[in-house]
Length: 333
Length: 82
Image (cartoon, rainbow over all chains, first blue to last red; front, top):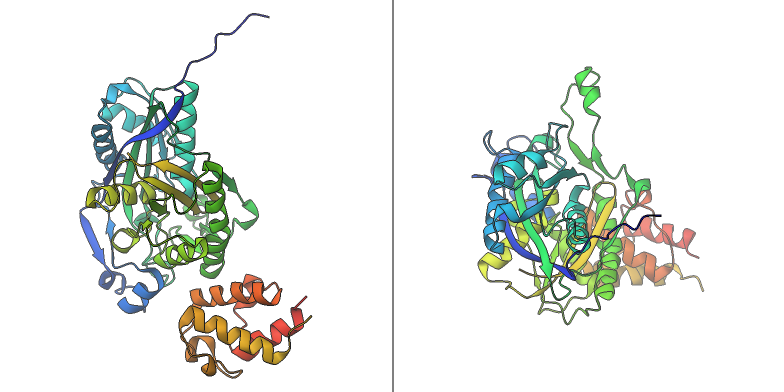
């Protein structure tokens, strides 16, 4: 048997930079109320959402990703040629093949970086981060770009009063690279496919193509079931991620849960008994639920406003359609 | 030991007070969670989970929508408690 030379990676990985892109059009609740029978007060009390951003024709999945990635690369202090891998998590890129990651990798100016898309709903950022960490430590790439990007406005049923107000568009990106210290903890992740009906696309694309349905497919969810799972089951997962990283909640500086709904965030904070000293991301108020993009977008905003600072210890947890989830503790860039 | 109807109502009153800030004395059998007690659909999930823990009972999502009043919830718990 011939001996195969092993790859050589970094001792550990860390997030080196973060960037975000929010579409230029800000959509207040008043616009949502043109198509559903509800009220600004009801929307705010059920979700915390005041405004969200909706992309225009130029703000494509690729274009938003490139903007966010450019900022993340600059923030990391590296150049695009150094990027060896591009991972894009999205459920709202409507061209199935090729992967949008390849176009992004090319337009950013990477040197033929490995590039692929993943589908893990609102847990997509954590899934991508885990893959990126593995690639850096294993040695298949020195720097990896992880992008969460969505145009959920394209998958929103504006006449569904339970979801019309929830979703937004945007892109968030991080650069993951080598580190001499552990800066991304063990990931606690998984799937619960027996709950696949809880959050889903209404019908397959092919049903629409063949005229079996008149309405374009949209994301739908069972609100109470999602709330229960997100708050009470995900609080357990979040606690497991803290335990796995050897971090107690009193050591924690920042909590960045997927920005699904502020009520879920509030209840998670209560269930986890997080001390008041922990900064909690509430980007959902002005960004809405942007699925895979929400955690890096919230991270970028907390750092930009000074609510969080470089070196802070943050718990991140994503959860959503699948159902899937991923939680880990990271050092902020 | 299984809780009595009074113990369940008192327990629900404490839970609703904790979650929605409603005075315990307002939580009566004939009161509707949403219409009378300011417990919306999401707070109702929190009430249900707290009640599950307190009374050692499982209340699946599909049954939650049938629990309109404090009396509905009390009857459900009386019937299903371990």
